[in-house]
Image (cartoon, rainbow, N blue to C red; front, side, top):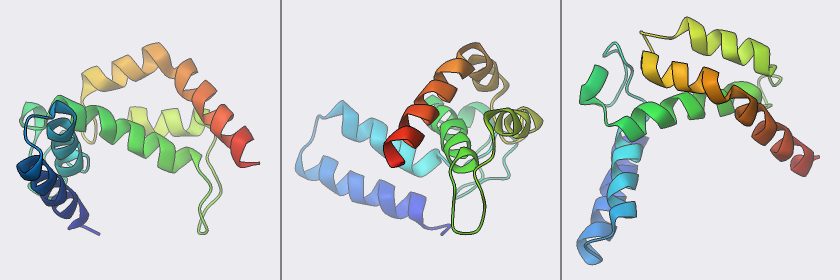
Length: 123
């Protein structure tokens, strides 16, 4: 599990090598490699912290956790938006960039709307 960010980034680096100049691929490399890093440096694969983590990784880290929390898994029921928001807020300044958490607060109704749209599609 802890190797998937590096494997994903390395795969995209090879795509970039074969098809250079695509900014989406370069952003994908940053996302793949950094979406499990944590604001306080306790994440993986490199233990980057704060602004060492690319902004796209800091943003996706929150989105990834929100999706995981609000999705049903074979080992857990989906958490409500309110419970998920609370968990994200508890991680502010440790797991998540405080600015990204603030941005989440400002648009959280959109997160809820998208989650509901996808839950309806899954039903």
